[in-house]
Image (cartoon, rainbow, N blue to C red):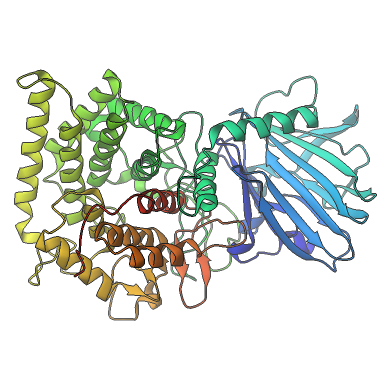
Length: 590
């Protein structure tokens, strides 16, 4: 089974997810990555990072080519192999999801001609360290354990143990199909295995109810797919992981590979704002709920990220895995010790957007007030900023708070002289004070600079244009947009900032989120043609599965970083929503 553990370029992977965990599937039908029972658990299949454990459904005839597609509005994936015949494997994580039990549905179908498929299961919990033990077969199902994980595999009665785990050959006539159901749990399993037909029906029904059709948007199919990705990454708690994976490098041996299997406050807000731009969909309600809980619990001590259950994330460790080519395996994240002021500002922006849609209850307003008080207390402090660097007085962080405070003040209700009016006035006054303090963050050319002691331009400074922090004709806005365009763009893509004197692509990949921001800026500027160019260029930076990573290698046309990166999908969705509306500004780039 050498083919099942060989790494592939990231554009060749697909994802199935149910909100509580996600599985990454390679072109040979191998599940190369799955953490169970939840996102931040140790992997049970870790071949993506060079570890043991896989679940592969692969044509027995190696002379085939691979393809695949998602069923519309869902994360039900169909791997497709064409050779002397055409075989498909329909696969999904069963929904509705159980936080303690993952159910992997795989249906092998002989679409055109007979099929002969090799199936191998090797459950290896603990990032590949725990072998399968206690194997037994009863009632047509195999069951056993791997470390703390219990598993049961139905539809595989003819499988036999071997060096690579449990293996069987599935042979089907044209038009035939065969169901496999794998359950993985940290608790005892139910007495009876799931019925495949019922599990598929429930999964289809769930997806049909949780993803809007998006037919009113440009690029409707991709926008709907972006929403499905965001839903697949969002747990029942309302928390959305930043990505399904860890340690996929942003640059070959560049030292920038991180664990993104946690819920970042900032990313939650970006996703919520993207959804709010289209309508009051359920993801928005869940995001507001999760942020409310965390802000009320932690106040000024709000951490940059949490587990999806709202717990502090663990510090960074290095599991004993080889790592994806060019990177080093890591679990946990050093962000736990950082203060990120912009997360508080983005939270207020999200609360305001939810308020405009009538989704805020009293406890949500209380959380918003708590976040505003935290800004008032902590904004003079240096913070790690949007890019999580060294602590400075980052301009973007303060502008994000100005935007959030003003948006919240505008959304606050109450008659003049009432409690809501007084709070709104206080928030507006605080925003004005913060903006007035930013005189030392204006470059000699009239644009915003990264911080008082860093004169470079930064793509994050496009956000005030999109959020309406300042009037569209503000000269600092105009100069900043021109500087980003002139200094940080290449071939239709946008970089975060210039690291040093090297060409931009020598330091890191283009940031796809920043490309979608540029499209929205052009839209605000009234340049519909430029907005479409930026949008189309960046939305094409994916593989057959339509998954975006954080960065895109412009010169090699390769995806870089963890997969899929939630805030890029959020950026794509928000961009589609805003470009579908009439431009609100005029001529910023004139």
